[in-house]
Length: 542
Image 1 (cartoon, rainbow, N blue to C red):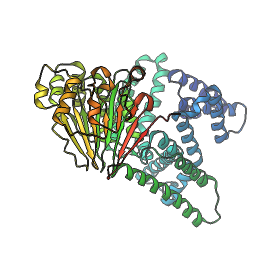
Image 2: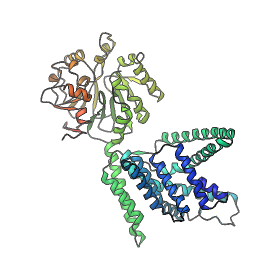
Image 3: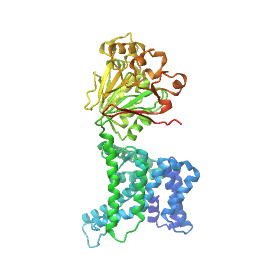
Image 4: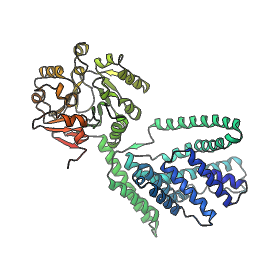
C-alpha cells in the first residue's frame, strides 16, 4: 500500500484519489493471499487510514490498531488466544510506541551524522553514505520496535528470544521489497502486457530464491535464536510492565529513569540466564515418556546436559516428531540431541525421527545389527535411513553402551549379536532393551520384546531389579510373560499405549505404582544424586 501511495503521489494525484486507489489495491491483495491475522490486521488498518482521507478525519495510529483488533475479534473472538494474532498486534503496537524513540536514540548516539545532509556537502559518496545510513537506521528502528512489542509473546508461545531479529530485518528488506513491488507489478501487467509480466515472473522467482538462500544461511549460523524453554507467565507480565513503564512513565531527571530501566532489564536477563543454565547443566536424571498414543518416544535428560531420545513414533497420531517431540524439546529448552537410539524398525517407533532431525540438531543415531540389516529391506526403515543421510547422518551400530560423558550409564542389555542374526526370532524379540543407571537407581526400557526375549532377559540377568520399568510392547497382555514384572519387582511401571489399549486391558493388577500415557499424559521420572525418585504427570486427575 505504501508503494501504491507513493506511485500515486508521484503521478500528482490528490490524497482522496490516492486513498481510493489504495483501497482497490488492498482488495486485490486480499484476493490473492490467505486470510491470516497479520494480513487482515494490516488490511483493516489500511482501510481505516484511507477512509480517514475520504471523510476528512484525522487518523490516530493507536486508535486505528485498536479498531482493527475490535473488528477482528467481532468476526472471530477466539483469535485473541492464538499466537499469530497476539504476535501481530503486539509487534505493531511496539512499532507505534517505540519506533520514534529508538530512531532518535540512534541518531543522538551517532551525533545526527545520518540525519542532516547539508547542501554544501557536494561529495556524492558522502551524501550516498548518509542517505544509506539514514535508511538503515529507519529500518533497524522499525525492526527493533516491533521486536520489543512481540518479544514477550514469542517467548511465551515458542520458548525463545531472537535478539538479532532487527539486524536480519535490515539485511533482507531490499529483497522483500523488490519481490513485493515486482510481484504486484507482474499481476497488473498480466492483463496488459503478458510477455513483460512473464519476464517479471522469472525475475521474482530468482529474487525469491536468493531470499530463501539468505534466510537459510542466517538460520544455519545458529546465532539468531536463543532457546530458553518454558518461563512462568509472571515473567511475561513483568516484561510488558517494563515495556509500558518505558513508554509512558515520565521522570523529571534522566538518571533515575536510566537506573530503573537498567535494573528491570538486568533482572529479566539474569532470570532467563539462570533458567537456561539450569536446563543445560543438570545434576539429576530426568526421563520423560511422551504421550504418542500407540508408539514410543522417551527422552532421557542425563546429568551434565546430555540428551538421549529412545525411539519416536506412533501408529495412529500424525506428525508426532514435530507436534509432540520437538514441541516438548522447545518447552524444555533443548535444541540438541546427543543420541537417538532406535529399538527396532516398527513404524510406531521410528516414523517421527525424520521430522526431529529436520527441526533439531542431532549428533548421532544408533541401532542394533538387526535393524541395520532390516533397513536394507523394509520400506519404512529404508526411508528413515535415506532421510538421515540427507541430513548428513548415518545410523551407527549400537554397542554395549553409548559411551557418553554423563554421570549416568546407559547400557544395552539385549539383544546380542547372535540374537540379531537368529532368523527364527521375531523382530520384536530383537528390540533393544536399555538400562539407565544413576545414583544407585535403575530404569529399564523394554521396547517391544515379547515372551521369548523376556524369559531370556530374566535368565541372563537374574539380579536385575530396576526401580522403574517401561512395560514391554505397550503393555500388551498377550505378549507379556506371567511373572516378568513380578520378577523385576519395580516400584514404578510406565505404559506407552493408546486410549483403546488402556480401556480394554491394563497391564498389571498388582499394587505397584502404574502410569499410562493415555490417562496421565507425558510421564516424568526424576532421579537425584542420592537415588531418590520423584514422578510427575502432565494430566492432573480430578
